[in-house]
Image 1 (cartoon, rainbow over the protein chains, first blue to last red):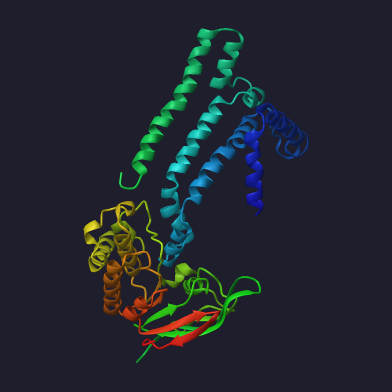
Image 2 (cartoon, rainbow over the protein chains, first blue to last red):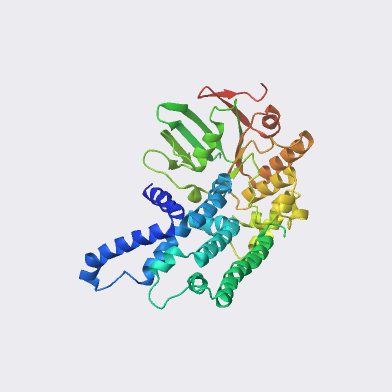
Amino acid sequence: MVLGFFSQFLTLGYALPGIILAIGIIKFFSFLDSSLINTFLKLTLLGSLIGLMLAYVIKAYALASNTIESGFQRINSSIDDISLSLKKTKFEIFLKIHMPLMKTSILTSLLLVISEVIKELPATLILRPFNFDTLAVTTYIYASEERMYEAASPAIMIVLIGLIPIIFLSKIIRDSRPGA
Amino acid sequence: MTVEVLNIIDLSFAYKKNEEIFSNINFSLNEGEILGILGPSGTGKSSLLRLITGLEKPSKGEIYYYGKEISGKNNFILPSKRGIGLVLQEKVLFPHLNALENVKFGIKGSKKEKEEKALSFLRLLKAEKFSKSFPNSLSGGEQQRVAIARTLAPEPKLVLLDEPFSSLDKDLRAELREETKELFRKTNTSCIIVTHDFEDVEALCDKVIKLEKGKIKNLPLSS
């Protein structure tokens, strides 16, 4: 129940503007840095890659979670009953039945997360560590300086990185259909 | 000597508190016997099968399987440890596995043993020719043959059938009924079949009970 609530709460992250999320993480990390973590672990969270990763997780969680959940809901619950009567444990059912049946949903969610993370800009701009630029940040910096030729290649890379997984995933999804 | 496979004592069940579907049910089943359970919809026939397989816990009473308590106040054995076969009305084959792989799923042993055993059960149910077919390319009757083969392949001592022939046409139903009965006789498997159809009971069962208004009534087969 707690996990369910936490999961639902996390899905709000997708609706949050990146800038609001980034400011929230900065506030939270500066509180941690000034209190617990710094005292005991001598670790500074603010400006580290952890903040950026956390922002990506919060932003992309809803996409991944909804896709996987809808894939799971499509599995007939009687399949579990039959598997249990065939002396299979819940872990075996997860591994041999649920996972193969959810392969398409998992791959689709992976694709959605990749495309979401790769094009994310506001939170990345604020939370990225020094000397750490993503393709979206590089494109933005060049474009804001009106250096369009230089901005073109990272922009094209974003499109290609989004496209290549689609081609591979479509093939995998097609092959994974029963009887293919 | 008759061996008692299943003994149900004062069994009651409710999905919600104080809303019992049935109460104080008693019956038993001997080895090799086929018991039919008749009754209108909503009387808890399927719930009774779920209790026997361990998919639900009784609110009161005990279930004994070969003399050992499997559900009761003091003991509850998980469905995966009971090994009681189950065939449902809806066709629930694993959609990503072909017919042979479906039947192999519950069999223990080496790869070769599993394959041979699965094929032999498909052969018994005249389903060998579509062993490589996936469920989405099989007809309703073919799917049900594979489902029965899958349930019988691990050689359970007790099989529960929940309206297994209800979605089939009349001829196919009669054919599959005969084949299933023959198979149960051959393997000396005990069986409980839940059905709406008295023809199923007449053709298959050694004894029959009726579940109505939460109580059980023994019926003579001739009725």
